[in-house]
Amino acid sequence: TPNPEVVLMCGVNDLKHALTGRTAAAFHRELRVVVDEIRAVTGDKCWVILPGLPMDCATIFPPPLSYLAVYGSDLWDQQKEKMSDVARRVVFVSRPTLEVMRATVGDDKPLTSSDGIHPSEWGYAAWGGPNPPPPRPRRPR
Image (cartoon, rainbow, N blue to C red; front, top):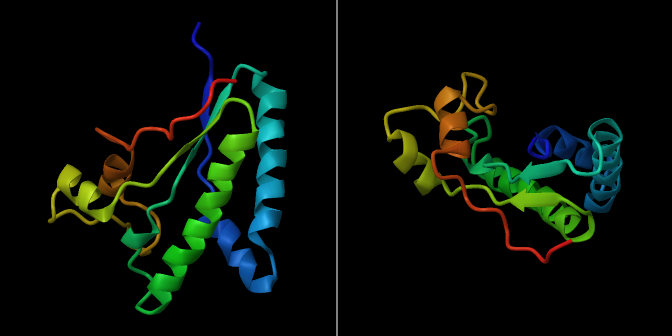
């Protein structure tokens, strides 16, 4: 049997806590706890995949708030990338660009659901395939 994989989508809801003083370093510590909890259930051979979030697709935030949301999401994605540097069998996959997502599903399909923040079915299709960004190269562990 192949090794199990868990895709852990996190960051946007966690980012909301930055308004109450939560830092990127705290997110990193909490992410480590979650990775350890996943391993406690799945075993040490499990791969944990941390995808970057395509916040530039969200339509709920008007400019300039949208720029702040993307910046904050990037900070949290940097913590996911750091986690892939320090934790065994953790891979960070950077978010696709808006151009790549549009090329995948077309300009006429909404990438977000009616709430303006969660991906639509086309947004999920564009985010994860058919050609998602490759995982960041990493040293063997």
